[in-house]
Length: 77
Image (cartoon, rainbow, N blue to C red; front, side):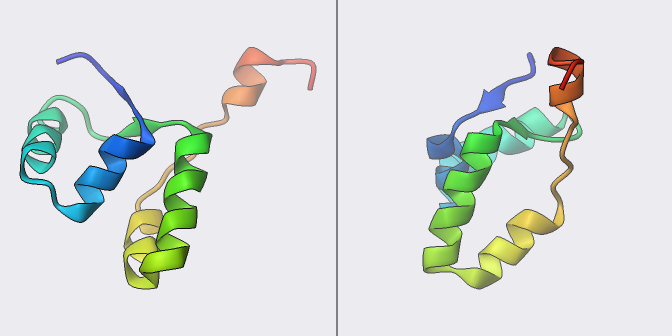
C-alpha cells in the first residue's frame, strides 16, 4: 500500500468512527507506522475539536510527531 497524505475529511470521518474509514486506517497501519497529513489539515481538525470535544483533541494531539519540512525545502530560511 502506498503512503498517503490524508485530508481533513478523511481524518474527520476517522475521528467520528466511520466504519469503512476505520477499517481502511487499520489496513494502512499494517504497512505504515504513522499517518501523514498537512499542517493545514492539522489546524482544521484542531479547530473543529476545540469547538466540539476537548477530550478527543487531547487524544488526537498526544500522538503527533511534527517533521521539520521547511529546512528540507527552504534551506535559506
